[in-house]
Image (cartoon, rainbow over all chains, first blue to last red; front, side, top):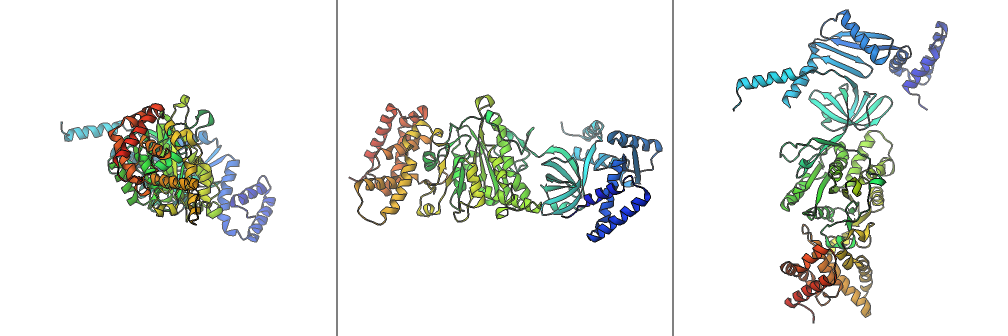
Length: 133
Length: 507
């Protein structure tokens, strides 16, 4: 039977979770050997992505992306972090910040498969749709 | 007051000040793959089955429907222009199940499967929406089928009566008049307290235009909606068309009204569903149809119903149409739909080319609801008609050998020939039930025995005209719906009087 990417990631997580550095190293060695044997080394990128998600979930971490038109003040950033903590119950938020002039103003917050779109551009588009219809 | 510049600016200002930007959390996904009207989308972990998903493209938003929910991706059928969608485009969930507008405003219109107007008569103002997929009414809500749907086609009303709430399949090869039966039935519903919905699935748009013109001419568009998914429409729209038509019917049914829905035709519907399923990589089965093609049609036709008084007493009568290949009834889709419906009208090429039109095969056609869906008068004259017609065909094949026939057989043959003459009927000329009763009464009581076979149709036409002039008998049948001694006398007198005026009778 073919082993799916998420199955690889899950077994990798289980074999390294809570282990010492030495054990982890040997487990990783075995894992790479397994991938090589199954000729699936090209899938390593996807496996890492899913492993990342899995690790974050188990450790109460959440990665999110915050896009704004200008550099944000720390207080504003904290509002976003608090919002995410409250919504998802995660303990630690890993926030990546982007600056994108195209959104004109406001912010766009993305995490998991969710998006909170508070950008001025989207509001203006909505207003345009509302008036033209 | 004409609009001034100030007025416009004032309006614009109030619009803008009234507008409040709403920020809400949305589920989003990304397009992994687009091909042939199908998209694979990652993310959207909370997507529901048959939820509307909006694709953000450069050319505006395009709608799609979630059909495959998998572990890490969602299979979506695209309802709009799929060429606008690119890999990596954003998709967001709307938390709305696919629904169509319903209501009185739909009547007289030609709409696409999403309920948008196709006839250029402007916007359709409706406030209600019904989901296109709905669980069929349960046992508690139903009543038995009793009232008739008068198709106006002599052969059908006499031999294969259809009741309100029944599902009667029309099946036959191409070009044998399947659609003609359905259209005649719609035309005959004028003044019968019936709403009609004609769903064209994969039909040529020229054919549908012809049907619309004919229905308009006959005044049938006053109570008819046409749901059009033409031959050039994408498979996803063809797939939802019959469900959309059924949802529009359910609105009237819930209000306690009677509705007739024609699905023309379900073989093309099955083919479009096969296309979608194969593109979604669902495993193919017999004739490459997916495993759930039976459920595809059974869940649609099960929504035809007759509700009991406590639930409004409405009904949905379904007339699905299936096109067979070279008369092959044992193909996959025909057997499926035959087993789902409450009977079938089987059209046969032999009869058609002999000139017996509508070419209804009396032996293979049945209605499982039977005579409980006929008015008493019709029951009385049509009782053994089906048996007699089938027997005649058998005897006629036998009698071709030309041996001497006894008088009993000869009599049966003579009667049968005249019966088949009466079954002949031109297209777009449905006949009111009272006139049918008079014609059948004349036949079974031997009044036509001395009318030459080639004059039967002439005699019949004359009889109807005569009956219109002296309309006591017709009025009597329409009022009492049965033939009692008094009406029988009137009918007898009518026929005898008319016979005295014709000069071609055999002595």
